[in-house]
Length: 103
Image 1 (cartoon, one colour):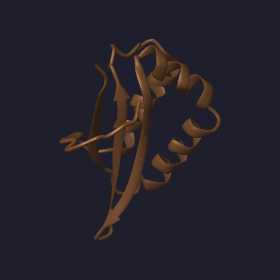
Image 2 (tube, one colour):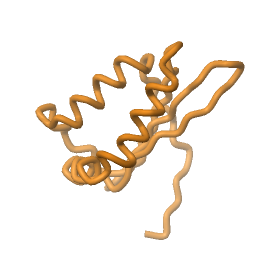
Image 3 (cartoon, one colour):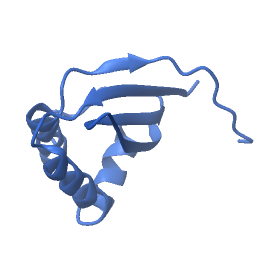
């Protein structure tokens, strides 16, 4: 059965615009390839939110699906992991308290 996962990241100082630019590239330039990759991983959707608290920027990554192994040879996956390492702090898993869907 599909599950929803979410992770919280602190965006590293000076990296907010780089991270937002990369997210925009995923949404626009790489959208078709990203959707193909998400499907290969058995996921239905994936996304990222950003917010600021007391001058610090945070990102929440979330996805719904089966979370099959990621193809590390996929160029987009490699680039995404490089951007995450360059722009984001350690991942902190979030508890999904509820998620309702009609489907």
